[in-house]
Length: 209
Ligand SMILES: [Zn+2]
Image (cartoon, rainbow, N blue to C red; front, side):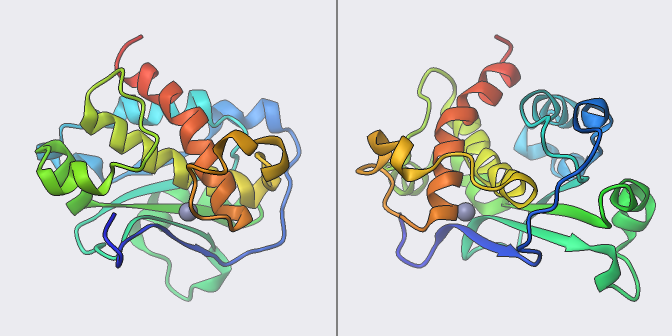
């Protein structure tokens, strides 16, 4: 992994954990929008990605915006929990697509950014990409590219889960990953175990099993 690139630069603006009522009832109303269709060369099926997230992250209630970012070079992915109250003028995508769902979730939405460059390198399986992911615990049952996509995406989705429900994977309960996961900050440990445990589930769903 490059020294100057982080798996995830996490930016959580709301540190208090907010919980929601009617969790089970509203899970299928989970609102997710993406800009995946702007990048057909990345060969990602937007509807299927959204479906996989809805199936495997049912407990995340606030709306999610998945943003493939060509300018994101210092991190592979980012998560930010944002409030519509922080803005005088809302971003268009939020105003058009997410604001009503955000209002039902204490005014918050999750923005998850994925590095276009990482995805492009992984898709083309360049040596640099394989090298930089050599210490990731990727599921190798499927195509390398999709394993990378869902590893990073699941890592960031786990940060969204943390904001709403707290850490799911506590270090003391998951000691088998202590050696493999280099970052021992609690939030990052939880996100990494989330990627290791849930990433392959999304990957299997996406790849048709
Ligand atoms: Zn992270």
